[in-house]
Image 1: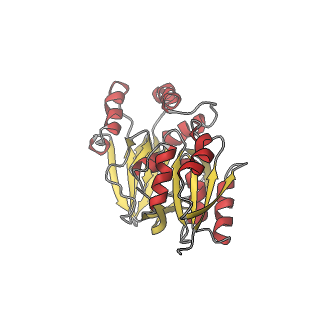
Image 2: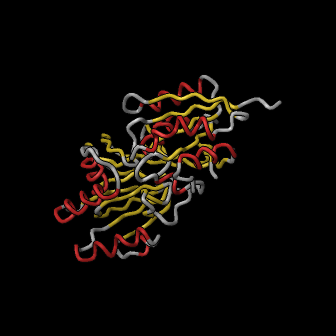
Image 3: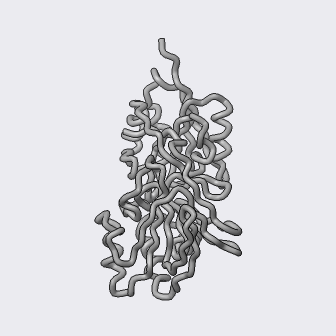
Length: 293
C-alpha cells in the first residue's frame, strides 16, 4: 500500500474576502484521505506562515498548502524555496494573481480537488536582497498605493481603484538607475515592475510575456500617461496587451540592480515593505514545485 503524504494547510484567518472560512469543512468533504494525512495551522501574526513552512520542512511534510492571498502565498514560499517540499494553493485573497496565472480554481472545493490530482510544475522564484517572491514586485507609484492600501480596512478591486484615482493626478514620476544584466540605464517612471508571473491579480496582466519557468525576470517600466489617456492605457491590462502601450518599456534579464542610497518602498505581491540601499533582483530557476490543475 502506498504511503500517505503528509500535508499541512496554513490558513490566514483574516485574508481577502472570507473564503478561507470554508476550508476546514471542505477539507473534510473533498480532500482524498487515501492519499493524504493532513493538519491545519492558523497564522497569528505577520509572516507567521514563513515560520510554519520552515517547521513543516523540518518535520518531514511533503506538501504545504497556502490558504490565502498572494501575500500569504509569498510567506509560505520563503520557507519552501529550494527545499523540495511542494507548495499547494487554495486561493482566498482578493486579487489571487499567482493562482490565476497557474490556472488554479478560485473555488475552495475545486482547489482542493486540484490538490488531490497531485500534478506539479517546477517554477522559478526571484530573490530580492534577502527575501524571495514568486510573482511581482514593484517600485514607485505601485508601492505608494500598496502602502495606502495597507491602511484600509476593506479589500478588493474597488478600494484599490479608488486609491489609484485619488493619488494619480498628483504623483510625480521618479528617476531610477537600473543595472540590467550588467548594462546600466537611467529612466523616469511612474512605476517599475519586476515580474516572474504575468499578472497583479484581478486578471490584470502587467507582464504578458512573463513565464513562471523561463529563467528570466520581466522588467516593465511604465511612464505616466496624461490623465485623459489613463483609462485607455489601463484597459490594456485587462486585454493582455499592456506591453503594446507607448508608455511601457519591457526588458528580460536574470539579474537586476536598482541603485538606491536611501530607503525604498516596494510593493511585494501586494505587501508594502521598505528596504535600505540597492535592490538586488536575481532569478532562482525552477526552485519551487507547485501543484497545478
